[in-house]
Length: 134
Image: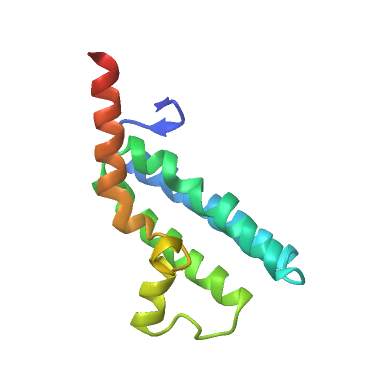
């Protein structure tokens, strides 16, 4: 069953829904980058503001055990989209990839890894829900 857009129930159902949702988000990201390829500044803004937060709803409302694999797929798609705006192999070394993930205030690109944020996002969503119950 779906509750607030979040799949709940049988593990196979949850996995199938999340796999489809992740594929939809990755397809949206690839289409956005391909259509804005000639305008890299607009493509970067779309990637940062429109594509990057698309998985966050599920990260906040589902346990990390159910979202970690899908967040990793999403992270890989983000790396590929960013490389499409630059050059192949641009983010291949660890230092550059780490800098890509750092917040802008630390001179990074601000593209946080959704797999690394999964536990934090779920915990924050849980805390907000419990505070609302009080």
